[in-house]
Length: 406
Length: 209
Image (cartoon, rainbow over the protein chains, first blue to last red):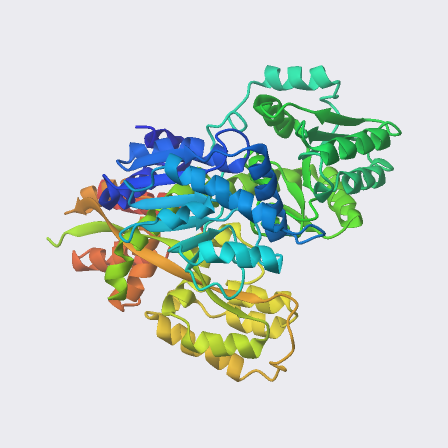
């Protein structure tokens, strides 16, 4: 069984517990719907979660909505307006586009055979209009919607209220006043993913060599797309402060989508800034560079995640799994991932970032202990098996909830 | 001989929608939240204790400290859930600490407190023990949640201030072994370590036979 492979990391007893939790759900039909099969944290988790659910006897399926460029522009706008209201506005044309494509998907995706339907993020949430009375529908929200744009909220609220449950990463991401039951399930990583598997030392060295990085000199690493919200300029500033006294290298590894002009702009600015500095490597990598990212994380001395705003930075968990102390911003889900002073440090400024990096570089023994603590924390709390168990408990609860209430 | 049946209890988390911005609002909520909210914020912390900030023993206390109420944080930390056999008694003691406080309870806190409820699900693992040998084999087969259930949560279920393993060991006449198991300190060891200690204590007794 696929699930049994995970005993390597969590022990046979925990695998048996998961099987026992899944036992009452055998034969249950569960559908997950999102907007893409490739790329992004959601599809990455579903790619493994669906086979694991099937392995446990649940008839789990995964379907993806269809949409044209215009539709995805609108859903990106909705995403942005829910996450961080700004200058944009949701227009009546946007709403018409959203409803038109949702209507097309209603005939394309048949949700009727399923007992439980998980809808991931706002793109497919309109499918709820096809909900049947005996079904339980869950909206899995992967973003912070605590302070949304009011007009956009009013639009999606009519869909949300029809759901039986919403799942957030952390309670702070929930919008106050929503009456639908709200569950808290943190995202996770898969130890068998290419990004996380153990790597041969020679491969790691070959990756460093390919990019001209010195394996003998301490490496500070941030993995993130080129985006101002990830504060690459703050990371460079912190590096400059550290570099004054400690010889080290900075690697900023990530990418940007070809249709993301802002990403290209940020990348160019970062390149410009880096060109003035020694030992800084800016790596614009293709999205499928899993082994390279894995190798960079494994070779890092300190991993940084200096986001200005963050949902749940899976790269933080990935680095922790590789026994790295992470210096991360005291924001969003990062606050739940890093245990300050135990698995790494939470910081509030460029100066704090520099100070904590310096502390970890000076005290390599302490950094090692924190790295080990970090790995154990991930094993206990942030592996896919824990997320699977949470979903199984949630499904059990939902299918029994009518009975419980009566 | 009385059989021991290995069980487990898993949980997920539900945000109650109740959040407090002042100690006063916190106290008000604490009086009426579902008892599994108390369970979540105190017991789940024991489950994860070794992977959490170590300054304070539970998330209530941690929140107090985060907002500058260090005395309250210490007073709430000293409340040890392992000394209780029901959640209502813990609730009363938590309330007492806050009621007796001379802090200004209406000062707006920087960060709100979010009350979360554990949605608990009991699971039968279909593993039984009839003697010490099958008992230790059973312990080898169980996971963290089952271990936590028998060592910690079962006290609440049975209303007895003793862990489930020791209770059974006493019933089968293994009083000394029961005491040794009771003496394993859950605050000092991770669940992985606790499992290892249990196995070693029982196997030592088996070999002594």
